[in-house]
Length: 45
Image (tube, rainbow, N blue to C red; front, side, top):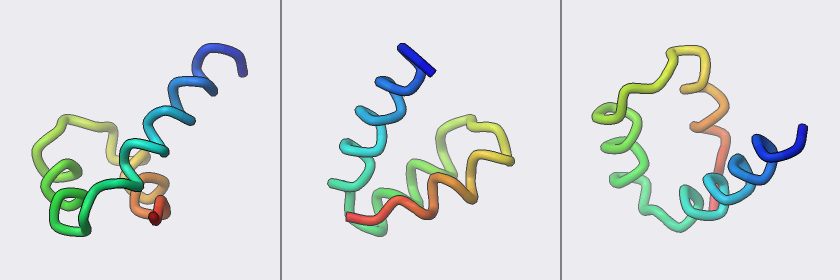
């Protein structure tokens, strides 16, 4: 996947450091495609 895969790795590393409250805040305040929400919610620290 190339550069996109690298970005996803960085995002996953960053997102997994957030508290559950901060994760939910991110999901509800950042404009992301609806189909991404399920994937994002699977990232755990």
